[in-house]
Image (cartoon, rainbow, N blue to C red; front, side, top):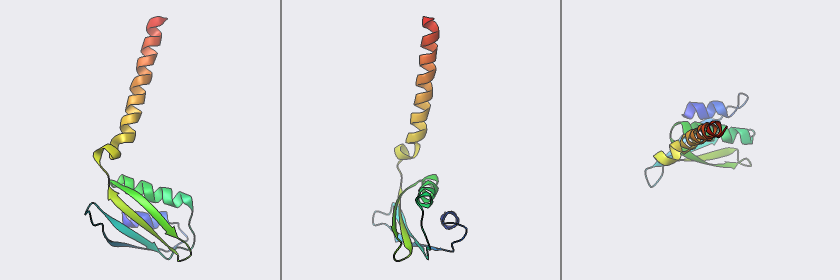
Length: 106
């Protein structure tokens, strides 16, 4: 995961990515990305997606005046992890049902 975060920072940057420590609840950890030359919002989205793919919800704080970012990774519950997929599946079922009902009326 740390290598993915480093690669997502950008090809022309050489950040240092380290685990700062675990959270008090023992359900997550903090990651520090230092030596950032610049920062774009798309990078934050990529970092968030990387954390989500590994089962963590990310809270990202960027301090560009000091050249670092902090990602607080908290372990996601099963509901949070699969909510998007469940809603998408429910939407597909609803559309299919409406199409079936429309065919019955015609």
